[in-house]
Length: 93
Image (tube, rainbow, N blue to C red; front, side):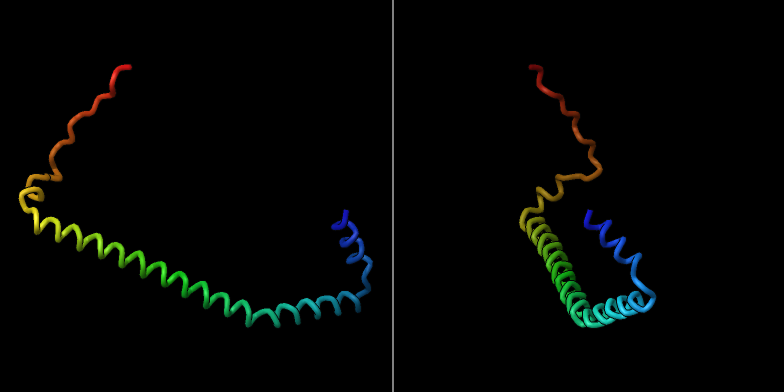
């Protein structure tokens, strides 16, 4: 209902009122630009931090795997990535 009233109000505006309304909207958006630019900078920094944390986690995981393989070479050698996976069967209930 309110949208219909706003639509009717906009349709009933004169050319000068419509021009003034457009000018007000343009001024509002231009005044908002510095805030939006600050938000973009903030979001970019958050994204960079999240990416850095992910890369650091990957590096730590890889380092941990390498250290484990160095400390337990017999286990690392016994795990053949090309070895077939044994077939698993579900229990009968």
